[in-house]
Structures are given as structure tokens and as C-alpha cells.
Amino acid sequence: MSKVKYRYNPETLSYDRIETGLRFYLSRIFTYTLFSALMGFVFFFGYVYLIDSPREIKLERENSRLVSQYEIMSNKLQQVQLVLDDIQQRDENVYRVIFQADSIPNSIRRAGFGGVNRYRYLEDLDNAKLVVNTAKKLDGIMKQLYVQSKSFDEIIDLTLRKEEMLRCIPAIQPVSNKDLRRTASGWGWRIDPIYKTRRFHEGLDFSAPTGTEIYATGDGVVKSVRTSAIGYGKNVVIDHGFGYETLYAHMHDFNVKVGQKVQRGDVIGYVGDTGKSTAPHLHYEVRIKNRAVDPAHYFFQDLTTEQYEEMIRISSNSNRTFD
Image 1 (tube, one colour):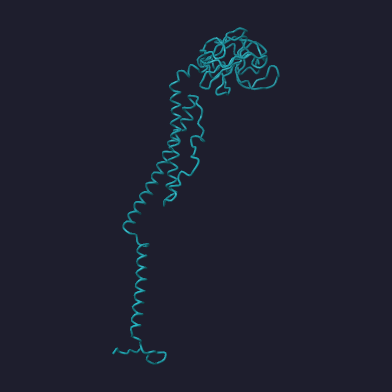
Image 2 (spheres, rainbow, N blue to C red):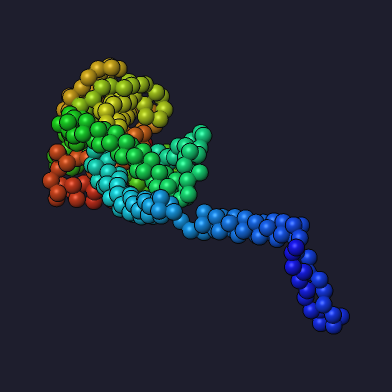
């Protein structure tokens, strides 16, 4: 026979009987079991989510090292970019200037990659921003290196053709003018002899008797032989290659035809008074990539320093042209 147990109840000032049967013990067991299970789940999830496992600790260390390496790589790529920028500046301002090569615009040197997102596969990484920026820097540098490599290929080709280029540059006066007395009017603003208005004279005038020989100032190919009652009158244009062209205007007669190869010093025609002209003379122009430049800068095979300065003085004193 089980013992009967009582518990004093201070509210009623009496003793209440305590149930101790099978139902009571089952209830206690269920309660303890439920509480233990809950505590077990709490400790389990706390361990899983709050405390890193040895494997997770190792992965975090590796991840930290990778992030550090990406940052170091990004800094090194920045240094490479600075060196590449310096090489590009030298290419544009030295090599291409020396060899009269066309400039490569920044829109080509620094062109991006169009189309789909090339870096979408990197966007799911934990440090996606750092990785994507590093990848973009690397791709940009690779593109610029490719463009720069092609540029140097072009410069090397021009270097190998330097001797040919020197023969083609218009480097002598188009008429015999050792004493410079035939220098008439030079490059710059002048008074038009017919219209009496101020206009820009894009060449150099040489006064000479009709029939005076006119020389090709550099090797090249005759591009055009034209006759006109106005403007340049009878004129010849020679294509020297490398972007150079020369124009010989107001000629009396021709000594060449279209497509003919000429060498520096060959007689291509004779001084005349044709077209818009007020006296026998030769109007001579030098053009680089279709842009007229001062011809006096290209007489370096003909003139000494003193003669060059004298030619500039003579041509500047004249305020009027012959055409």
C-alpha cells in the first residue's frame, strides 16, 4: 500500500493531499523529457550556427587570404596601369609625332567590352565587388596592351621604311632659288591681288620667268594633272606617301602625267601665269593628311639656318600674293 503524502497550503491553512499515482509520474516524465529535448535543440543549433567548426575556421582563413591576395593584385594592376599610361603617352607624343603617324584616340585605347555581362558568373561570390573590379581592371589592361602592341607594330614598320620616308618628304625648293631672290610671298594672311581682300595664303609664291623649270620636291607618284582657266590654272599634285602631298600651280606647261613615278629633283613642269594669277610665278603648297602646312619648314635639304631665316624674312615682308 502506497504512502499518502500531504502538502500544507498556507492560503487555506490546511493540508492538501498530493497525488502520487501512475498518471502523476507519467506527467512528470513527459515534462522532463520535453524540456530536455528543447534544451538539446537549443544547444545543437547554438553549436551549429554560433560556434564555427574546425573546417569552417579553415575556410574562413583561406577566404581571408584570398581577399588579401585580390587586394594586392588590384594594387599591382593599378601600378601596371600607370606604367601603361606612360607608355601610351610616349607613343602618342613622341613616336607617332616623329613618324607622322595618326593618333590613336582614347575611345579605342580604352574601349570597353559591349554586349552581355561578362562578369555575371562572379556576382554570387562573397566578395563579388572586389573580384569583379579586379577582373575588369585585368581585362581593361589586356585590351590596352593589345592596342599598344599593334601601335608598336605600326611604328616598327615606319622605322623600317624610314629611309624611304626621308626620300619622300618634300625637302627642297620647287625652283632654283639659291640666292632666295625668287621668294615672293609666304604662308599666312595676305591681300588678294585681284579682290583686294584679306585672305589666308596656304602656300609659298616663287616669282620666276615663264618657262623656268619646276622640280618635284620629294619622291612620289603624280596624283593629278589639271588645267583650269581660274583658280590654280595648270597645276600638278604629287602624292609622296606617308600622308604628304605637294601642289604646284599656275604652270605654263607639264612634263609629267597622272600615275607617273617621280624622284626628288625631277622636272615636272614649267613656271607660267595661268589661272588666277597676276604675273608669272609658282604657287607651291605642302599638305599633310589633307591639311596645308607652311612649306618653308620643309626646305631643310636646300637651306642653311641663315638662309632659312632670310627666306622667312623676305616672304613675311610681302603683304600681297601673285594669286
